[in-house]
Length: 371
Image (cartoon, rainbow, N blue to C red; front, top):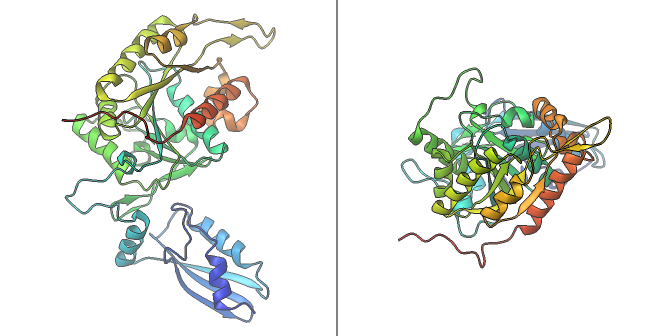
């Protein structure tokens, strides 16, 4: 027969799927009883109906079944009291929370943050910015990095559908748990509003929503946070630059001159906010005829390279037109996952690897000064 200590030791290997820390450390294990080879475990969830309850039940059962003498495992689920939730939130935040009326703390803006924040931007819509965001995030996650996507396109949010993420995030004590899909943490206004109704907000509300997504969402220790910005240089892009002065911008364009000129204005705007343009990605660069294999430049050529030169940055890669890139976005499965060997996937994976290689600390980096 296993002892209580052996059972608790096994339970210490079970991690809360949303927080990533052992359930024993988070005081989620309320009680353990052993009777004739049957182990009863009482686990406390943060809120009733927690979307991760089935996952926790499976993980607890899988951790205890291999123990010698265990015939069966019964997992009973309860929910925390308000006081227990407050203690849970305090442990998870580690002192980074904020009381009512205090200014929220954005962990990615702190000097000791090791998260690389990338703002994915474009001058105009329709260039595939969001498709590239989800595929880069999925590619980085496949490389073993902890990745999050912040859907900052409040009016035209599309990340939930493209990532296949649905449901409503758990929220308590000024803390929101992001949803997860394909190994990536995701937050979007689309999780909180009726999908059929437009979001009609002006500057101050947009600023507050972005602040909450950055400060109140428990992202954990991310390697990369990708922010999918709305097209252009409006309120959200300005607010993000103010809140995250250490973020880098990736500009997405197509080869045609019209897209390149508009993207140039978006890139030049970053110089006024202190954000750095870390690179350009050229989407829809060529079309490869499926019957002959011949390559056509139907949107012209050279736009990405010219944009990179004018902004004194590098062209990170050119991605061919791939209908499945759009189909994967509609189906909720990024192309780099459904077909990693496709030419477009290979280019996106190469770009992700370049971004991972360039990830570095703030040491030696000039920061915008405010007087």
